[in-house]
Structure formats: structure tokens, C-alpha cells
Length: 109
View 1 (cartoon, rainbow, N blue to C red):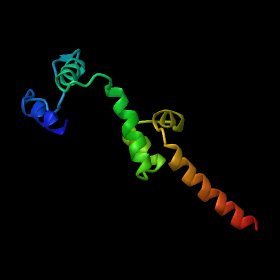
View 2 (cartoon, rainbow, N blue to C red; view 1 turned 135 degrees about the horizontal axis):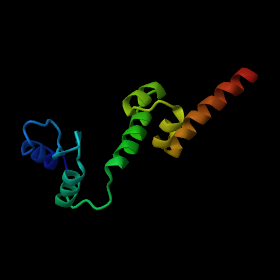
View 3 (cartoon, rainbow, N blue to C red; view 1 turned 180 degrees about the vertical axis):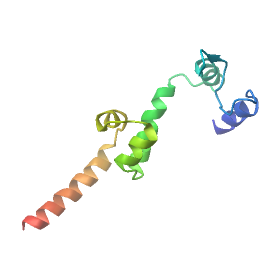
View 4 (cartoon, rainbow, N blue to C red; view 1 turned 60 degrees about the horizontal axis):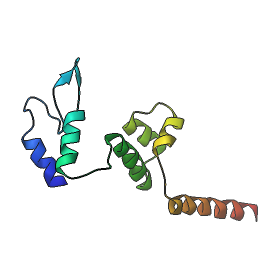
């Protein structure tokens, strides 16, 4: 998939530095057509561009990104919105829960 993205980037409109750039619609960049064509060429059937935001947020959180870092990278103004995008795996959540439980138990005893 990386090679396909590099090929698309090489053949892009040179005045636009975006991989999926297409003609602008009312002054904004419209990537829908280029995105659909790229997925079709790569024979990818169930990937949405928006879904990549969820993947990015979840992977960055799993790598240790703080809530402030995630909110900044994602452009979220509220914690509620950030939490809608970040889907931590059960094992990671369990790891932190167990660590907190041990800390609380050691302070109580």
C-alpha cells in the first residue's frame, strides 16, 4: 500500500502537495474522488478516510500519547470528543487498571 501511495503522490497535481488532491470545490480541497479511485486501484473495499482518524488516535494512545497530545493532534477541543475516537484494547485498559489497583492497595495496607 505504501508503494501505491508513493506512485499516486508522484502523479499528483504538482501545485498541490497532497496525495489525494483533486479540484477544489468552492475554495476547499475535495479528496473524495481521488480517495475512491485510490481504494479501487488498491482493491480495498471497506476503508473510510474517517476511520483512519479512529485508528490514529487509538494507536497513538497505545504508544503512550497523553490526552493533551492526542487532543492537539486530532484537533479536538473536548475530552468527550477525544474519547469517541480513541478505542483502547482491553489488555491495555486492564494493564492500567491492575496497576492502579496495586497502587491503591499498597497505600491502604
